[in-house]
Length: 487
Ligand code: GLN
Image (cartoon, rainbow, N blue to C red; front, side, top):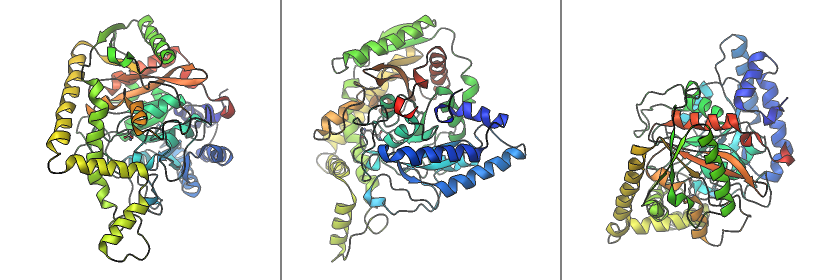
C-alpha cells in the first residue's frame, strides 16, 4: 500500500473517510516529514505546528459529527504570498520578514472553510520574481530529485515540499509560469486557472493583470478537488469572474469524445532540448492512442511573449511595490535622517537585486517619453498574442506542448544572466498574457529528471483541461513517481 506521504489528496481523503487514520495523525506525519527533511530542501519559511494541530482536531470533530466534506482534515501548505491571519507572510522578502497578516487571503479562507489543515508557508522567489527560487531572501530551495538543481520558481518551495512528500499538496501563484514551471521541474501536476477564476484578495500583488492562484498536486484529480473549493467570484477582487463554479471532479469522468489537440509549431523550436522534445512527443502519441487527433497550429506572435511580459509585468510591479516604503508597509531602516533617507534606505535594504531590477525597468517603461514606445506597444502585442490563441481555439479543443525547454538546471547556472533565466518561461508566459488556464503534468524523465507536458484550454476550459490530464494519468504512472531519497 502507498505510504501516507506518497499518496494523493484523494487517496488520503479515502483513508480518512474509512477511519484508517485521523486528521491529527496525518498532520503529525507530515509535520514529522518536514522536521526530518526540510533542512536539506529549505522548502518552508514557516511551519505552523500549533495552528495545524488545532485545525486537524477541529476536522476530526467535524468528521465525528458526520459533517465532513471532500477536503476535511487534509493537510496542505500555502505559498508564503498568501496572507494567513496572525501568521507571518514574507513573500520571500526581507521587506516583509516580520509582517504578520491581519486577515486571511480569499484562497486561505475558502480552503480553511472546506476543512483543510495548513502545515506551513512555503519558500518562494522574492515577490514571486524568478524561475529558480534563487531570489528568495530566505535562501534557495533545492530540487528533491537532485539537490544540486533548482526546483523552479517562483512557487519552488511548494513544489519541493509536495515532490518530497512533506505535504500532499500546496498552493502556488502563476504570473508567467510560476506554478507550471516548478511543477514540470519536480514531477508534479501544476494548475494555473483562468485569470479571474480564483480571487486574488490577500495574495501579495506582483503583476495584477497576470497573477493567478492555483495548485501543485500529485494528480489532476487533486487539482480538481482543490479548485472546486478555491474558485468563485469575490466582491473584494473586481477581476474575479461571476461564472458558475462547476464540479471539477465530476468533470474528470467526462472527457470529450474526439479530442482535437493543437500542437503549436513554435513550441518545438530550436530552444527546446531534443530529449525533452522526444519525451513530450511520446506523451502526445499516448493521447493519439486514446483517440485524440493531433493538429499542428501556429501562434505567430508567441516568440514576442517574453519581451512583452518583461515590459508589462515590471510596469505593474513597480506600481504595486510602491506601497513598501517603510511607512505604510514593510521594513524600516534604522535612524532615518529625513523622509527621503527613510524611503531610500528602507527600500534599498528591504528589496533584493531582482526586485530592484524589475522596479527600475517598470518605472522606466512607464515614464513620460517612453510609455508609448514600451508599455503601450507591449499592450498592443499582448492583444496580438491573445488573438493568436483565440484563432487556434477555433479549430482545436486544447493545445499541448512542453512546459519548459529543459529539465531542472543546476543552482547558480543562470543567476548571472537574467535573460537566460527569463527564457525558461518561453512556453508558459503567453498563456498568462492571454489569461488562459494551463496545466503541467509529468510525462517522462530525462537523465532521471522529470519532464512536464503543458496543456492549455480556452478561458474557463478547466473541466476539459483537467479531464484530459486525468485520462492521461489513468493510463500512465509518471505522476506517481517520487524521488528515491524521499520515497
Ligand atoms: N519567472 C517569471 C518571472 O520571474 C514568472 C514568475 C511568476 O509566474 N510569478 O516573472
